[in-house]
Length: 546
Picture 1 (cartoon, helix red, strand yellow):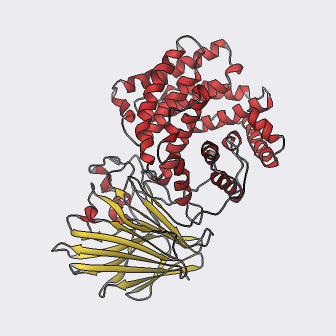
Picture 2 (cartoon, one colour):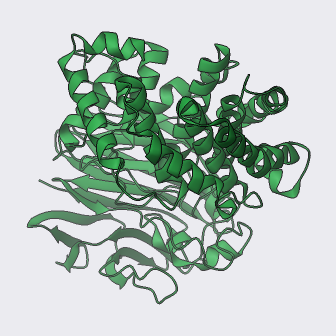
Picture 3 (cartoon, one colour):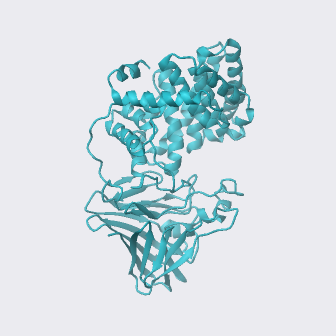
């Protein structure tokens, strides 16, 4: 807090950020207590900053009311579904620490007892083999969220009463050891296997857990130094399309905005990377959003930095590349992903591309369906009965109307990026191994012409009846001929042309589904169909926006 006050004495931008946070805190004082955990944590952080910055006690009653609500509703601490317990543990831990001086000894004991009973003791059970403790040995977002929540909860009580140290000494080493498994997933370049949406969920909790460790014990046991972690904020940046939305693979909604949140400033300070600081300040400016408490706590001075290269290829368990003509809102942009179909929150979408131009999205991923659909997370079968997870709902090849191999994997063969003509190539053979001897997808962007060419190169097995190219769109589709389609939205147009092979033709198919699945109203599939395909064949599709 002293650092913030010192900087604010001369920095007018930080003064405005602080004003934003204090204004929000003042409004929260008389607002109703939220009924779910995440908003409760957000409010506690904002109120806690306001109290410590101003010294005013007007924020205490609301904060105590939030803590009472959380501690008085054990249903929010669903330790059989441990993610809920971990999030509640983090929220109460932060609130307990921030408002410790505002709490009576009786209230402190009440909150500690709730933390222990509902969060820390089940956490100890998790580390000792309880059935709900599977988060401790997986490598996805649950690992980071649960371990970070338990660390914050334990550390919030450190040196408070004699028995508190037991929980710190027991939980922190085990959480650190477990969390290392998930931190490895950022290697080597920062790509997050569960996609841009779950990147935000996992990485925000990683930052809060690591910051708590650094403040409490002076270091984070090397967790922030894991390969790829300092680069992962660039992954988030490059996964942002020109319209400001994240590309939407792996259960990420296509309407998810890449909004400022202060985490970029945390990493800017950790890594001494002022390009990330400049990015956060830019996001605040262009979004028109108010600064968050994290923008203040992790504040870094804005500095002029060189622009980033337009393209980037990220290696990792789920590789991805994005290409663009420039950094404007009107830029031509394309992304393409590889990886493996069994990744958590994955779809049968190896080789999927997304395409934006003229400030609009043209081909994109529909994102997740309802998580409460029966067997939606049965990765060995049930998940693949739903349209939005199937191959047919993605911008990928399809052979004989069959899904990709549910255990299939793919990798980049080549990535020539940041060139006048950038090109990436993916080996998709394993995704179609029962139908192809080899299958390669190549995406090329000519930046001067503003065109994107997608080439699918097949070496088919015998008895294949048809091959199709697919593009998911909510634009109006007009077939000008068997070889040319025009997409239109908001008065803008792009043209899609079949360059090869002869005999291929366009079809349009509705993507709408019946309940209980999401309806996908107004969404269609632009298909390029080749009946009786040759054993060796290329399908080439050209996308033009100028």
